[in-house]
Each structure stands twice: as C-alpha cells, then as structure tokens.
Length: 109
Image 1: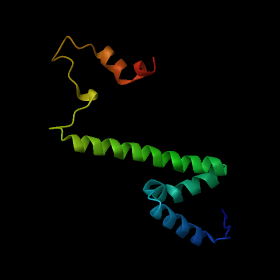
Image 2: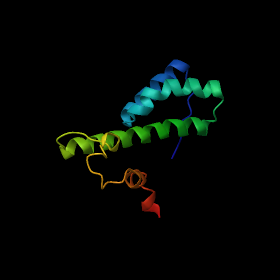
Image 3: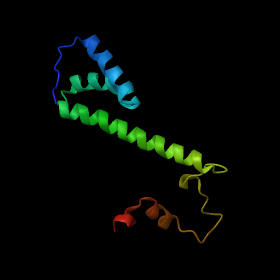
C-alpha cells in the first residue's frame, strides 16, 4: 500500500478534510474539524490528541443519533425520562434504587 504525502495549503487542506469527511460519512468530524484544528493549535495538542478529539466526537454523536433513531422506531406514545418520574404517585418505588439502577453499575458487578 502506498501513501501519498501532499504539501497542501491551508485552504486546500480544509477542502480535502471536508471532502474526505463527506465521502467517509463523518458528519460530526466534518462539522467540528475547523474548531478542533483551531483549539488544537491554540492548546498545543499532539496529532494523536487532535485525532482522538475528532474521533471521540464522532463516536459520541453517532451514539446519540443511534439512541434517537431507536426511540423514534419504538413509536412510544410520548417521551418520558427518569428525571420526570413522579415518585409521589407510587410510594412503593424507591428513588434511590431507581437512580442506582439508572447508573448501570449493577451490570459490571
């Protein structure tokens, strides 16, 4: 496998990043590249640190979008979260137990 190294201008680099992210279907990296580049230069991030920042942003956004798709696909009649749960309605439900279960720490144990 050969790797081509090109000396690109800043403008050409930006265009190449935009095109590559579009082709590789990396919308979050595409959207955050410019800001992350600026922050990396300002904070002196290593190349690995810079790449890790962009990749983690992409992964986190994909997880968020995947969860949103699953919720939509479930066709729930309405959205509810534990934050909205009214524990006064059912006194048998212990808020501490529910919050402990919500952390999912019990899975690893």
